[in-house]
Image (cartoon, rainbow over all chains, first blue to last red; front, side):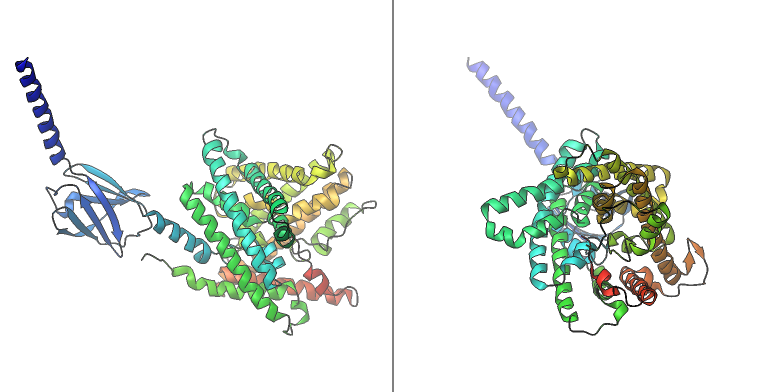
Length: 306
Length: 220
């Protein structure tokens, strides 16, 4: 009996010893963070055996064949390593880090909030749907005559945009793609837009009749808007994840609301201006939108994380 | 909407086509479907591609609606029209992607967005659902041609001024006014061309219905 117990203890000790040494030898990447302009801060679970530049190979997720050259490796207290690169790294993009010794691979992903924010800002300012992608112009010129209307439309629009983007994303990811029904995309997305609008209309009429009387009319206009359809299409084209899709929806909704608000402020002033007769009505509104578009070109170099 | 509703007997084919090109030009007169008119007209070829796509979708969906109008219950007509348009847009989208992949890569998103064009559904509503097959076909053809010509005109204007070429063939050395090829230039080009249309109209028609009225009618 005591012999058997001795065997068991010895076996257990050997097992735990083996596991312990294995754990000590195994180096894992605990965290990897891109810090502007060109640093990658790494934290490992154990000290690295080799810390020269040749040990590290970083590639952009979209160009896995082109390594980004490392210019300097700095060891901060034992487990931390700071790599400096010869190129700029973007905190909002995906990279892949590979180590030669120990053989390791790690995906460097941006933090969720950084991704959300950068997509949102890009959609709202840099690629503003109205001023640089020219979408939703019919409604943009139709509703931007008065400031109150523009604000109401902007709010309703952003809400519908978020709803439709999420529903379309789920349908696209969980139904259309697995079943290889990509050619139904347009049909499904326009159906989603129409039913979300109808659903919100019914809900609003039953629960908040006052709000419905004030904003119901905009809901009906939204169905024929191209931005509301463009967001799911862009998401599907880029195979965006749920967070990216949500951020694009919020950003483009906010961008459209901003454009409407700015334009309505300018057009209220335009009422008192003396416009040459051939330019009256839409032509002068187009010229005004052109001026705003020029101003928005100033955002084109903006990158929050550089 | 300043679109005229056609309840009576339809006019002849020639008049219907001219109506679509001049009197009710979708872009310059009705101010409908402006998004693509600004977006894809940096060159003539892009404009041509989208114009042809719209022409086909308009004619095909007009004909489909007029053939099926007895089967469509009036209360569900708008969803049914949307589905019909979406089917034809998908078909055209896939054929363009197959036959003109290089051009399609530039304007692909806008081809898909034809489904939300106000001009197509408004023609179905005011014309195709009331008239027999032959006039509907010519009305669709006229509207499509009007749209195509408007896109070609804006495209030619912007390409000539912006890159000094026509349909990719360089005419002038250098780039005379690069501004017109930029996003903001698109808005200014439309403003100028629309004002030109208004001015011509006012000179031709004299006292009849001023330009401000038709130019102010926004489509949705």
